[in-house]
Image 1 (cartoon, rainbow, N blue to C red):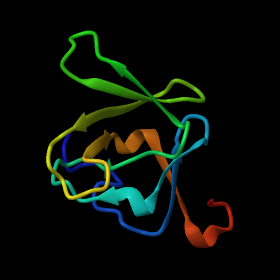
Image 2 (tube, rainbow, N blue to C red):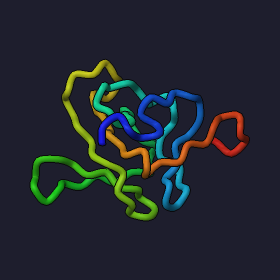
Image 3 (cartoon, rainbow, N blue to C red):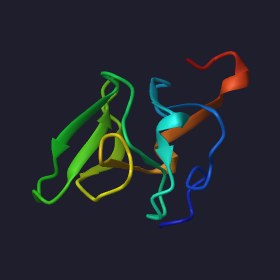
Amino acid sequence: YPGTGEYDKHFEEGIYNCSACGTPLYKSTTKFNSGCGWPAFYEGLPGAINCSPDPDGLRIEITCAACGGHLGHVFKGEGFPTPTDERHCVNSISLKFVPANSGSSM
C-alpha cells in the first residue's frame, strides 16, 4: 500500500540494488519525493532496467535487466522538476539499499 514501504521516505546517500539478485539499479542522487507513497527515481543506472508495456496498455512496467524481477512502473510527462521528467515508481520490497559508507556502493 502507498506510504508503507521501507524506502518511501528514505534519503540516505548510497545505491539501491535489486533485492532479488543484487544488481545496482538506482543512485540515491536520482531519488526524489514525488508524494506518490512509493520510492520515486528519475532514472536508473545505464542498462540496469528494462521497460515494457503492461498488458492493459496503460502503464509501462520496469524490471531488473539482470534477473527480470518486477520493480514497478515508469510514468513520463508528469511535470516533476527532474532532468528526465520521468517517475520510476518502485516497490520498496524490490529494493535493497547499500549505504555509501559501506564500501560496497558504486
